[in-house]
Length: 392
Image (tube, rainbow, N blue to C red):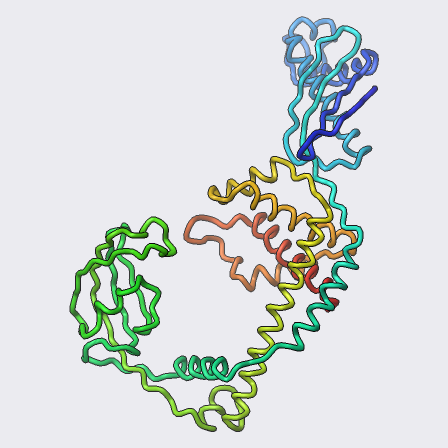
């Protein structure tokens, strides 16, 4: 057998294979024996008829196709192993018309080469920048007050009231709108809802049991592009209205909130938590910066099947964004492979259980266990690569 190949753009390969007729006869013989084993001929036990009798009933084209398939599968696998290719799509095969050999051309995409040489130097540089950023982390008084107020609101006593809705009330409503097929229920603090500007103003003064109808024009910069600058009709029913009775911010509150002896200790803990959260954001930004630098240096030739697959999941994603996402994943994979980062099965199953993925069904259909396993594996692998970058 002789073979040659040439690399094409987007990590594609064109492989040409020539198998001399003597060698191809072996594949033909195996195909013949496989076909013979399944043939029943009157007067003979299944698969035991003489070859010359079998030849009279076997379809020659089917026999050739089977032999060709065996030859292509075997030689293609051998070539992939020899050249360390991981074929990621179904090869397109063209059998050449020749009487001197069995020849074919196969075109396919392979897992791209990812050069991460020098990544440790990149990571070391980003870690140095991270330490300087961490030294400058501060927590403003307003941030601590806001967090404490959130904790106070979370522990507020809620008491139903017949009064009209005012800012600060917790309300439960049913909303019908002209842009949604079905009504939905919602619960939020008045003044802190997530509706269009002006929506909550229309509810002020309304009481339990009342229904109010109104229209709002979507802001020109509204997050939902379909509703920008469009009139939306709402029909809102008030189901519950609650007063929020806030607890006193004192040492007793601190003790209930987390076994702190004093309110000062609670505040100190909140400040420490905010500082830790900011540090975590800086660490994540550092990892992303290191990976992006590695992507630029690697110059990865992204295969088209990878781009098509990720864009199938998000129809609005541009090809350029798809390439960036894939390149980032490939660099993470290459780093993990180089340093031997592999999540254990125990870690994967623990994470699956944590996400509640052990349930057999979800709202939009059965859970694909294989896809979930792969998704969790990638998440854990990324976290471990981040830890590697940060030397955790």
